[in-house]
Image (tube, rainbow, N blue to C red; front, top):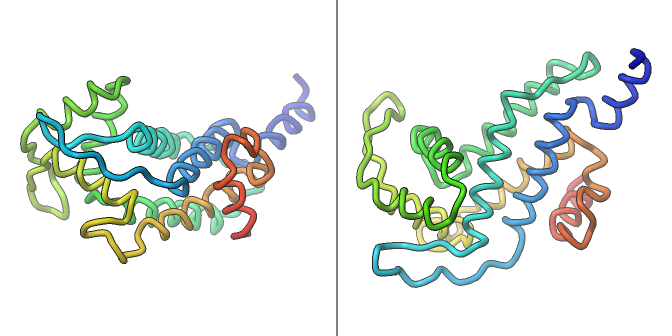
Length: 205
């Protein structure tokens, strides 16, 4: 492959290469999940709190999105200030989630390791209290609480009602997507698959 042809391929994928393109696509699916109408929080089952299919898909989209960050490879056209701004938006997105940094870092590999919904919930609920470091202190993570928090946060209910944290997460996610892959606002997977996300990206340019 000639250098010129390779440059054309990279340009088609955006200034952050294949990893950036994939991160934008996953981010668009995550954004669609956050924007779509929400089912009511299901009643707690015999073994504790439960998630809907959309709750599971949303957290998996976020995990895939977050896991892509270390693999970004911006080309030389990306200004250092722009790259720093992108990472700030990712940081603000993370801060908008219903987890502390210690909880989030513990949760990511747990979710990545379990492909099936029933395994994921059973694992999180069955762990009991797990100690993690957060803000310089050891704190206990309770899987049941994290499950409940995620469901409430997606619906802006409970302690998250009126906080605006989900809306801020959506704004930060939109900024990251548009920087990673500007053409993602046109048709990442087709308007029929992510209509709410595409409308959001177009309205917040």
